[in-house]
Image 1 (cartoon, rainbow, N blue to C red):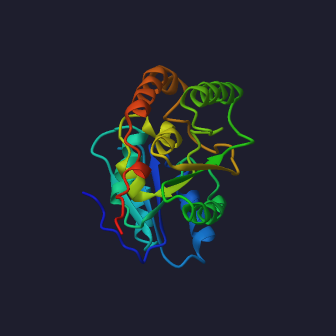
Image 2 (image 1 turned 90 degrees about the horizontal axis):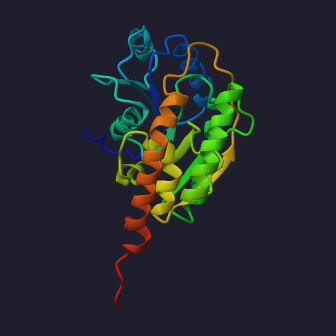
Amino acid sequence: MNGKIDKTLQFSIVIPVLNEEDNIAPLILELEQVLQEQDSFEVIFVDDHSTDQTPEILQLHKDTYTWLKVVRLCRQSGQSAALHYGVKKATAPLIVTLDGDGQNDPADIVQLIDVYHRVRKQNTCCLINGYRAQRKDSGWRCFSSSVANLIRSRLLKDDTPDSGCGIKAFPREIFLALPSFNHMHRFIPALIRQQGGKVISVAVNHRTRKSGKSHYGTLDRLSAGIIDLLGVLWLGKRTIRCDLLKEKQHG
């Protein structure tokens, strides 16, 4: 069920997680420190049916922080599904997303929100996308991502150096109007641009994963990437752009 929009909230942070029991508590504490001066917000952790202690840890912290909400999917559905469900449950008009592994720095949230409000004055269909200029991943992961970004950027012309960066800011209503499919989170910049939207990349901090391992990894990206890419290309040829659906005013 879609969340009812609460315009008194400044923003909703949506964080998909899967088996991140050692990373959740430090991330929540960081969010509390970074956002303590913000007037009104909510943070929604979407548990993609974790099998470790992630659900218990989330519930424990939910009792401490009034801004924390927790939803749990009935089965593992993938990062895109968890993200989409979290945005639907969010109640603020502005969405900020983070990965749940602690590699995104919550200190970058305020910067992205500031850029978002400036860009939105020019184009209400917009996306502020993080750019991990100095990635703290393995050499193979950085290489494979660089190749994927190069191919995707050349074919989709999304003008985005780091489409897979987990920290983003965008309007809730625009995101929910995009086509939803598995792995769509990697193509949000292209989908926004296909709608006539504006995409701005902002350099953000990237940190080494302190615990656990990636659950949405390289093989997953490579196996689905070609089919997804062709699908998004197909959508781009047939998309009805939002900026073309403006009613002509008669004087």
